[in-house]
Length: 477
Image 1: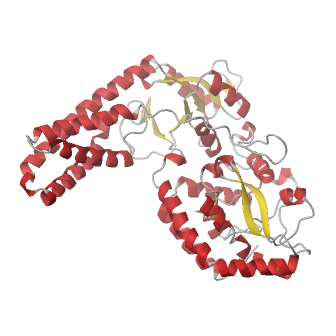
Image 2: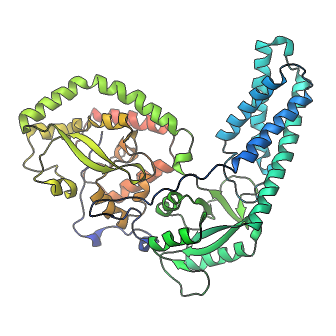
Image 3: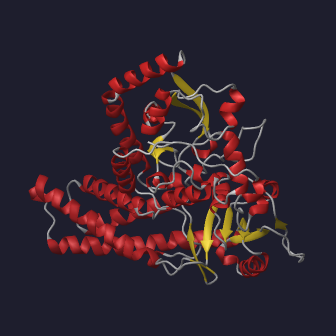
């Protein structure tokens, strides 16, 4: 369990710089009055038409391989089993997602071959177990596997060739993010090579360079107009910036990172010699359904087990501070959505403005002994298990904050708004590293974004275990 309090610098001038693109403004600007923040409206997801030809290619390859087996009976059942396994394995490997423009079937062959081998071996074992009369011998299995690989490389090659012809004829508008000089060189290279299917229409930088040519966009309003007027579908990053990546993904753009650290990948993963890889939106990562299942599986019994403690806490608050046991406060959740967070009341604010804009109440003289105890032991956070069950929060994730402070921090801390790419949480990586109480917002932001960029279900389990261990020696707020 965590708390919200920390030291708030007394003047904006003492806050850290927001990085090279500080001039672009807040990712979550105020709208409709102070304290209201939103991320850009998410575009409806585009139809996954690009995946359909690849799915068809895999299905055709399996049918040809089954025919090569010369199986007279149950041919369709066998085909459906292999197709199902291949689609499942290839889908989890990301082989149906948008690839780099020049990626070809040979680049994908190692991934395709290994998964096809698993699919055929599992199928052969299942057939031998449930229909021994139709068991597939080793030689016939190898023949089917070889026919499958030959067919999938050929058919996928045709699909990729058609995609490249379409990309050359109908290039996608793109914005290039980086220092003006480097971005202009990169944009010029892409303009001279239409085979990549990307047509730069502008540059995004923190400042203009006075050069003629592509316009330089220096603010979120400029980006908004360019995305709409030029139907921008791609954003290419020469300089990493988590906030802008999230911004473009909110607009429905495919985001690419070129240059920077090299990483293993297909030979075709480049844009005119610049190593590239697609930045996958958090919502498309595998395992998020399992994260939600883990939340429900742990929060529901925890809430039931904690019911006596909840009743005792509620009684203590009622006796010490009077009516109004629960404290409800508006917080910013995933994708900038607002939700009502629940806590046990430890202090009765003088008005709504104090509740929304006062940062820390840890040392307030108005707090009762019961309130001090609940905050020190983090028991005031227990009602948030209900927020987890409702889906407002997760057990693990960046801690949610009030709209007033999200608007401020998004303007002055690089990547702060990018914390909202994942569900907010009861505890997080920052909290288990001691970033609670009077600690740096910049440090919390860095830990939260690192958690999101390297998320795994096992990491959530580890953070929960470390949080449970920390409750034995609570420091409170």
